[in-house]
Length: 478
Image (tube, rainbow, N blue to C red; front, side, top):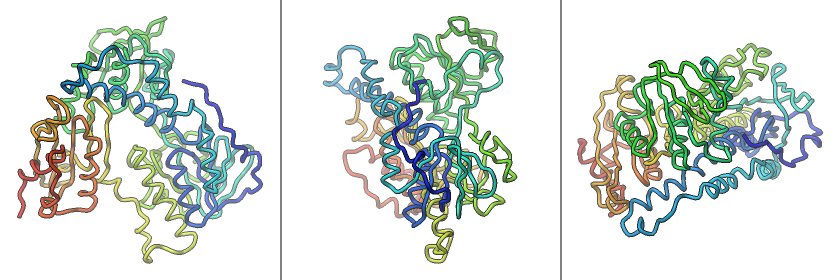
């Protein structure tokens, strides 16, 4: 992992106030947005950050990982177009890809993010924040008091399972996987979730021999079976050794890493990435001082208020509602707004629920940047049925649309809609270019657009969005 270089903002040394309307612990995208919306609402706000302003997403997750994956995606698309593939010669420039990635992390410096906070009128204290009681936070050698609210936006950290020898083997987590300066010759990956699968595509594309272990029956367990099957095939087609239904029982590092599986086989690697889940970053937040359990997820209502309190909020991954940056930012906008409204006694339309975060129940969009990518929103068929809904589905190969056939040769794309009670409740798109298609489905689900109206949303020709017409034609409408 690269060295963390603190930015050059000097507000922590110059802070004269010890009391603010809102104190936000954790200055990732969620915390930044909480503070920003609170300030926009007329309150003063203090951000407390122990590492880099901008958080996990900016330096070790979304931005660097997608910066690694995008060149590989572009190369794959170019090689899938007759007349263009002939112009693509030579191997990918790994050093250039990693240098471009580093530019997006600003070489792991947060000067610009700290400057943004200053320009937005948000105070910044560098250091670990810790609750010391109701509305009080110790940080940077001082104790700060909140007039109205404290918000915990500390996110999560990698979960390291209790496997014999794993900790001693100094495994990669997502941080090392997105910041390594060179491709390991051989990379073993524990976990077939989003992080494990994306990093398998990334490092295989950058030259590593990748072996991926998943203890369940397939990768991307929370996605539609067809999407899971197609991504497994895509991994194997690219040379990734995907092993499902197996668990790692022992890891030994003696120069190389030796991984032992529960089927008795062993795999040799140069590095091992652990990507089996996340745990809340709440171990040392002082939760016990306010009657909460250290290390626990924080349960909140739709205004992001922690259960049992009237002043403590938790936004983003730490509340376990939807572990995605965009959903954390969505929650942050709600939390910052509701805190300001409550502090000033001015709810929108006299109704506090106008500030509530509700889309993170059944309307969560997600893009998995595999090759091809998977974009989904709402409920899968299985999740809808678990909620007792009577569902209908429609699916179609995107390559069979005019736009899909033009986009790349032999387009592997596929789409599915999940419908219940005459409206869309879920959608999945897989294939080149689908990352920008999912928002239409998000709008339809959030807006609860009836199928009878959605049928009149005419897709442009010839684009891949024509798949909407093909899908809706399979479903009943007036």
